[in-house]
Length: 174
Picture 1: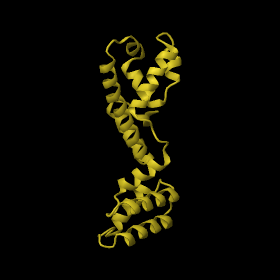
Picture 2: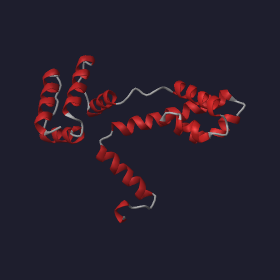
Picture 3: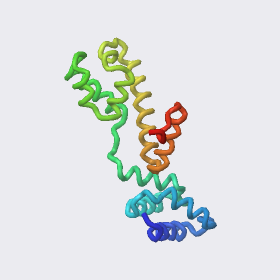
Picture 4: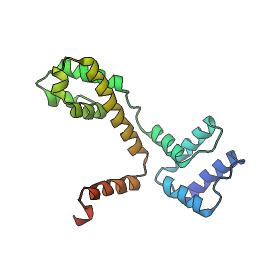
């Protein structure tokens, strides 16, 4: 969104929550703009209007980003649906066709199964423990994906750069 569109968004928030001291100076407006400018105006406006419709207090930057992200992403299945997806894949592909089974799974389920080990899950005799472990890993991956989707792209890139640098790898070196 551009600055003109952003000013309309700010005006809407200020007008809706007049009792709160929102955007007290230019610096606060600049921070808000920097953190929200990557969201298309139409999406940001719908996110703010949705927030206003549901909340008595003004949104934070994170609230707007969360609403905008939630509106643009496909509804993710929960861990129980992922577990059932795994069981169907085991029944259909069996122990010997790990690649086929993994290919048939949604991305979060696939990553969860990779971390736990497809063959280990197939051969396990303790389905209760496997289900509990699956849930823990699935929810962790799902939460991380949601958080990453909510971050501005430039910030996510900076975080990835810092992670690589902390491992002794520098992307700037080529």
